[in-house]
Length: 456
Ligand code: LM2
Ligand code: CA
Image (cartoon, rainbow, N blue to C red; front, side, top):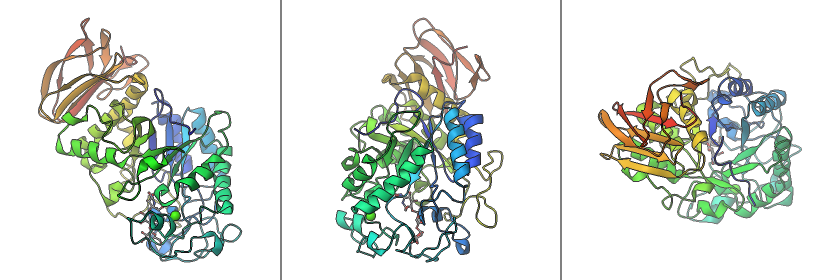
């Protein structure tokens, strides 16, 4: 039985894309823990190729050289310290696990990697040799053929023979090494490019997470297409739901919100198997619908994801880019600079007050379903989460209305436009009457949210 993400309490994942380990640790203590984030997806920690001639693009990190924990983000000691610090702050670490392949046939075909290891494509001394890779040895050309998708090469990346016992054991050992340091879950990169049985075998050998006791949480990157369906993979973990990304992002991009009440049945998998997101590091570069560059529409889509009960939400946190290949801010040797939310180079979507406030909302409403749905014009919606919360999304003109909720009477902090801390609200408050109603003015292109754990 695969571990599922916790529901009804601290299940929000933030993807701190390309953040170095010391910065992640600091963020756990100072922001993520106090604001109720449940877990961080960190970028791949294993040794990777170093592409100095391409100015260290972000994607070099998706070409493993060995499973030593020495990357541009820091070494093993910093990684282990980060996991400890974050666990103490109540925040789990989920590792982006690159299991399908090793390095590719791009500009650099030989080492050293980021830990100094020598390598050439199909030969990683002490780890893998030629016999550990699939024989296809060419790019996937027919994406309608599941065999090719799993046995040939994804953009020239040397494709591991994941059906081999030796390769499976090596991959399980890498993941168990991380679990031993306290890692609580994994994003399985390029899962579609591995047979379901291979991932099942690799993850079956995982240890329980020490101290926490449970199974590690596994979610798999499966980009749905004609040949391969995400629901094939749910036997061993959750999957990323790209339909959600498209539906919700397009709804907020187009100001067409009235269809968002019930998303089940339209997504690739059920709510309790889906990891959902507005954007990820790939879509924001290759196929952007909404990203941080889109301002209010993006912010509201992310707030909606946190307000609505479908799936396990993953918040993107980016570094600013115009060049799609560019890596994060780094020193000359490619070592990533400290992430600094005060600088324009690091966007820090997760610190946006409305987004962070909605993490608290999500934790407060738990498993309650959608109630008291209201839809005005197609660009204005509001709904409750049982008697625990109520949220309004306005992409139209200024909205003045008496809303009907199931909230107990009281004075509530608007957690999108104010921060609730130590019983005080530094933004607007709204008074819910004995009959559950409240009257509010919601400005154009803004949201409002109330929940029972933010009452003044
Ligand atoms: C993923 N999910 O399943 C990641 O989310 C995605 O970001 C990864 O691609 C991909 N799988 C493989 O792990 C990225 C990037 C590619 C890049 C690869 C490997 O989007 O562009 O490919 O990482 O670094 C690059 C070059 C490509 C070249 C390849 C091999 O862009 O032109 O192909 O390296 O050298 C010859
Ligand atoms: Ca493969």
